[in-house]
Image (cartoon, rainbow, N blue to C red; front, side, top):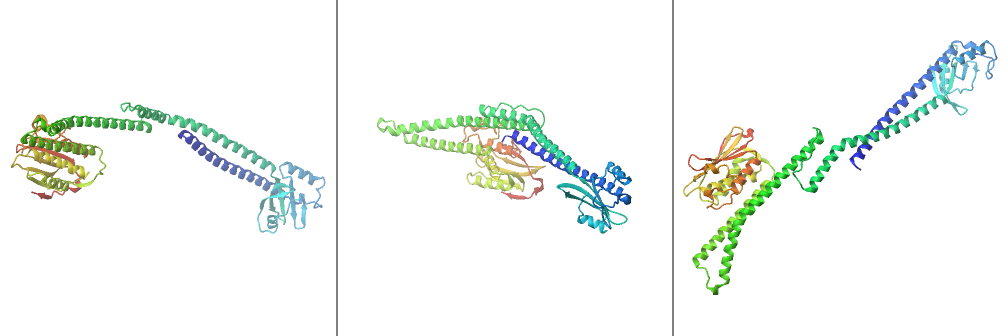
Length: 469
């Protein structure tokens, strides 16, 4: 069932329930009021007769009273609205009868156990509303009114209310369908626009946003999602293009060297064998190129993983992360690393943060000359934590300081050294994902200083050194 039909059915059911409830309440109130008015009229008739009982006592208990003043009075009273059936019961018996039954309620009134009785009785297959009131001299007066006219009125009222319920439900269904169509029209337009984007794969197509309601917010959210997808696709395309460009050179060099080696090995009779020294240099070049290609591949994988990392953010002690990265870096370099840390907790992804610190350390140790040292320091600066890595190398030229964090960018002085130009790009990406910034500055010692600032949890500012070496 479509949303339009569903809303129509819901509206019809809601209105039907409301109309039926109101109609049932109205019917009960009208029925109660009609019975109350009928009982009041019968009470008045009974009191009128009870006020002058002598005028109504006749010799015969079963025959109507003869014509005379009493008969005329009876006709006058009946013309004033007395019920067509009534009877008077005295201590001597029934003085005048209309064949009304003496029920248990009437006996209770006659015997003085009740002040009055109102009940529905059946006489000759006709339902009557009967009131029994006591007489001052003893006995009781009974007056009855047929319920046919009242029940006929109630049946007509019930029929009208039933028709009103059906008409109201039908009208509610039609109006609900119209309202649902009008209300869902923006959603249908939004659905059509999204379907066109899905069919054409054109992420640059903006969905029209009209107004400021929930549908407009949804359209704006779709536009934001399309913009994010466009940026992600552009980033992926740029990464693939840059990776293809960077891989092309080492792969071409590797293929050329392998072909040269294979050709020399396959044609020993031609006299084109490589001298041992050239062969050794060629094998060393192949090994270097394979290592560089492996490193480039690993960094590409890390960069891609950083973009779509499934790692969940959690409270992290940055000092522990730095210590772990330093220990890993010390295992693969001979450059001494000095560490000065304080406990600093933030919310982040520990694996990505450790990889970021390790890339900073790898960059610093690569540029540090023999006898140089790398210094790592972690401090609190206001509401942020500051991580600085200083090397003893030649430093970064001012023209290159803004570009060293770009993918595959390598300064002219770095092109002779191994590397892919992705290490600092991964650093910048990880820092940005954690809401921080990274900058390259000249160190006072003459080397390069890389400064990372990230938001810290202020409730964990302990400022106690945890490790120094």
